[in-house]
Length: 288
Ligand code: 13P
Image 1 (cartoon, rainbow, N blue to C red):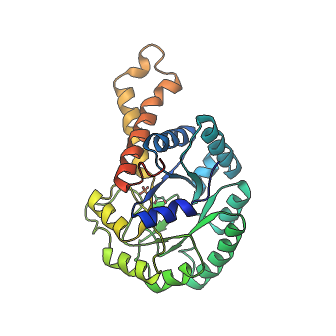
Image 2: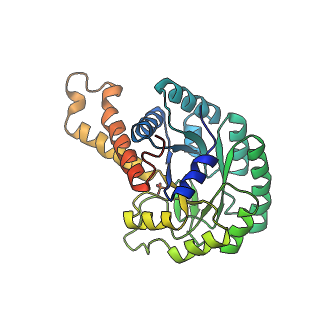
Image 3: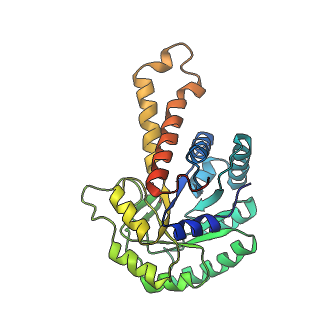
């Protein structure tokens, strides 16, 4: 059974570790991430952006695929199906589609409007027993067409959204989606500590989890980050392993062109990377 992420994230916050929320694109991603979580005995969130949801033929299909694969594989660790950077309409659609968790990203609205819409969606999600994440302050870079300069979140705005009863909060602290540029200044821990204080210990979400140095990840967790989103890193791993397979001419040997063979190195690479990240985040072994 898929579960809401509230308990998963609250336990992580109390236990000073973080749970990975890994973006999915297709069957291979879902399967690899779920197998990794089971092997690492870690709770996990599989999350889907609206763009990937369209690619996968709609949220209902995403929910059916994740449930079906989860049950077929006999996964025993806690798994939540989460919407990543949802619009107001997308969040409502995922409540109907049988997700167990949603994110409403209202960070591009004027703050009062973000607050109003967040309030409505928090009530709707909770009425369905689902967890909900909201966002204050944009995350840098580009995620599925949404471009943000990555401003630092205002702790007082974070406080107002936290007081609405949101389950976990994404707040900009200098993090960026995609690859980090060479001149990146790093995470702003001062601001992170201020946000954690202003929100009275609300579990915080670190977006842009690909390519952040391990010491910064660990420090962020110690300051209240309990959910870490990872997308780009798994795409890079999959692409590199697939490139290697083809460049070595393996697709031309025997039936190496069979998609189940062609995609296997990429899937294995995703699984290995997810397990490695669960160990860094400290969630490995927490579902034993
Ligand atoms: P990356 O693609 O940088 O890992 O970011 C993922 C993310 O934050 C999804 O919301």
